[in-house]
Image 1 (tube, rainbow, N blue to C red):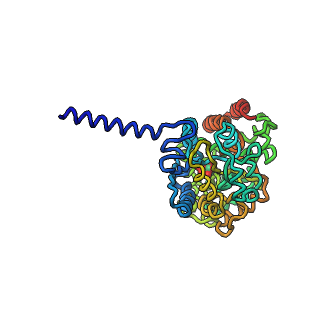
Image 2 (spheres, helix red, strand yellow):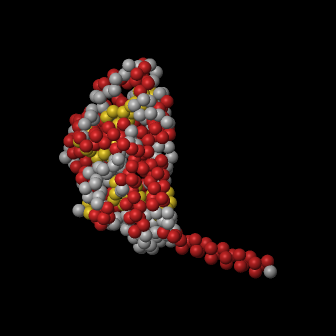
Image 3 (cartoon, helix red, strand yellow):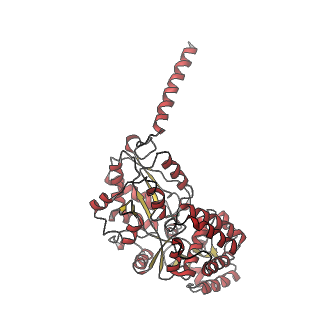
Length: 430
Ligand code: GAL
């Protein structure tokens, strides 16, 4: 009797396991339960927006979608790690296994076009753009970043600025520091602060991209917009004296950072500025979301902002976008999500919390704080340049090599070696 019961239990277990297995098994054109066309059509929205300063905007957007489409179940499938440190690998393996999320965060520019579009993994969205009347609602520079061969492949939810210097207002005031606009002024301020026992520049490069982010702003400051852009098209060689100069300036800046930089992430670094232990931090304006939402600090009262040294009049563009992977069987629902994300309402729910400005040109300016308003104005008049660290300027393979080289540079400080590595990685550029 006991034996028979055991056998029946075994059979039930086998049945249950095989049923579960079939949910996650994938075939061309259809996804498992965790995929975009998963069980009951659940939309899994894939990003790296978890935790402090990152998730508030996303949650507001998801809530708006739920309000508009209560019958479409949605899942926040975010994977933690700044700048997609972990999410990008998870995404790559899902895409490879034909198990794409319903939609995923991807930077406009090379990251979208040279990876997923080139691999024929994305559906064109021209019809959706037409239907939603988006063709003249996004700046043409953004449309270019999400287009390849005349087709649009994703919808921008925001515009982040890369070249922002954040500073603690009280620390600056108490120490008589003026906001530095050049590298010379930066080093002068940094010396004064150092003498007073304050960390001049906060860095958190536990995830190496944060150091690359700082380096790209130094490149921009030393080279100017035109030459900076030429680096990514191969028109300016990495052994150009200006690149070497930038590496030297970067090296000098690193002598002013907190000792524990390699054990902090970007939030931990921004936190040093918030508390006044450090005076400045170079980070994209997701840091503003962190300062205001998480640290409860006020714009222009507790913290201030300025273009990083030498970059006045230029704007390092980062745009987070979402597209429609091929092979989903609920693509109509995904399109509904994309229409909410691309609507004025969607952008104005997301961006005031995220720290970014809306990608649309007709958003409601009154919903944004002074930082947002200033940044929207700057975007209109500045020279726009693509971010390297955030995937717009160059292919993933190149960015990975730069991250490794910069990471080594931060500890070893060998300028020639950095230049050599950049040069040889340059073969990844088209
Ligand atoms: C960027 C992304 C931003 C922000 C940041 C930190 O790559 O575009 O939206 O999330 O990483 O994680």
